[in-house]
Amino acid sequence: MQKILPGQQVIDGPLPDGVRMSEVLRDFIEPYEPFAETKDAFEKLVTVGVVAWNVMLFPEDDRQRHLDELLGIFSEDIRDDGRRIIKEMMERKERFFPQNRRMILGFEVADTGTDWHVTVMSTASPV
Image (cartoon, rainbow, N blue to C red; front, side, top):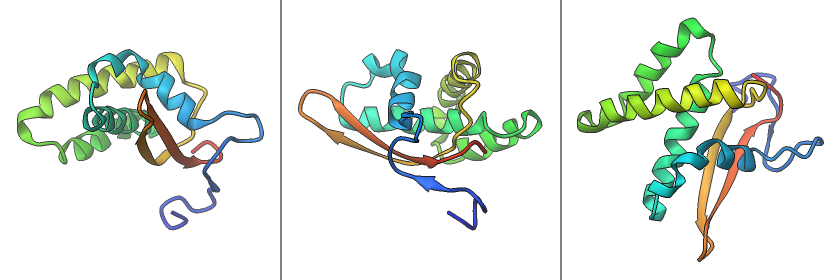
């Protein structure tokens, strides 16, 4: 990670201010959660949420290029739907979470039996 984000501290857990990126990410994707009924669907939702979140951390002029690159990993048959959902999420990020500029570097989803538990690795400071 140091090669990709030189000078950035990477943490797993809350910051001294108590903010947990796992909780922030859950709040961010919350409107879409009812559509993710399986663990696989939920992991896909989290992946799309992370893509949207991180794209919004780039300068405005670079966002479309990064989005196009990331959409390249989607199969062609779902790329348009993916773009639409990611754009909605990007707008949600800007509207409700503009002050949070921590990059999400990875996540893990665990089935608790009644819910999905999300663990997030992110930068400690804004990017």
